[in-house]
Length: 490
Image 1: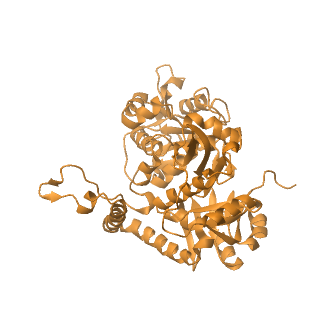
Image 2: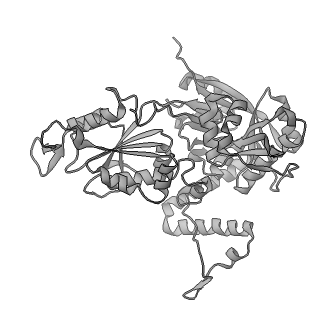
Image 3: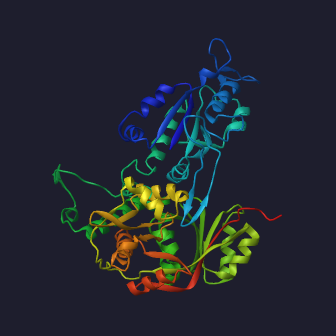
């Protein structure tokens, strides 16, 4: 990911990123931080970038010209559609279990107390970008004309005023970087922190066991991981309820929705699992039906039992929606008419409804090494899937089965949460490797509190038979992935 910061004090940005996790991420080339000095672009011979405001008033205002020319330097042309030599053209591919969209123009963010408040949800949204341009103001701000010309987002880190935008920019860079695959080393590190899944983080303890007469909770010393996870979950709930009742209210509403959806869990698994794992934001519920937006910011998910319910829930899906996932065939014509989306994939949904782990015959299954990505690309979708597979590997959601120290097959979890990405090398087919990989994914999902499910295209009879043989329930209703049409009809 590439950050381009337009600032009067580039040393503040560079020094702030030259420590700890950010420094290591930059050294690993997971991030780049380019601090561009706006003063380098002024036409005033003394390096001046500010002037008095029209209409009078206290303080000075940053002028439009140097800011605009600094922005042009970063974008590389007059329409801002490309980043210059510092980064490649931003073709941000957002995957949603087979769906993709491209966004080419880099976002330009102005740090201002007048902007929308920066939250963890905003951080997740911005972490999907390949390039972010961050504009730091000073004095009384920046000439409104250039802001209108170049800025796509105005963001605030809180309702207070600072002397400049550099500290807010660093806060935002730090929060966003933690969500970039590979920066923290493990996706689980980010998943257990505050605000994930609408809960504050549980309390944590280190040595000694007793300090100032206060002992570490006994359950943490037992080594029983199930009991520890249960204690942490309850502690997080209690802490959220006391310290952030507003957040707890959102969590409680989501929990009630999950309970209602569980009445038809074999049909609603994709939405239940997304809510359980914090991979979707609940938008509205209506009886046993609900609509949510995936954390990728693209996929709208609807679970309903009737066309009338589905039609009512579509009111919460904006006109520019690009992907709608739903389980009601009668909605397809309406979705096509209203959103210009058509059925891209019709799938059966398989669900593992038990709470016990599945047996795995083949034991040598490990996280997939990024060094072997070419093998995965060659055998799953080709070059167009490289970035998607890389994302799955770096997030620790892609796995390899080994035989005689060579990769015999692989599997993974799609960005939307469904289990799949299954491939077995031809010389190892008709062995236990395929079912072992599938079972491994089921157990992986169970360990993380999810409801394991997979979407299988209706014509993939072999996979359907394997799922049923393994003991997964295959739903009678099909699931529909509807995507934006590539070309508008004349």
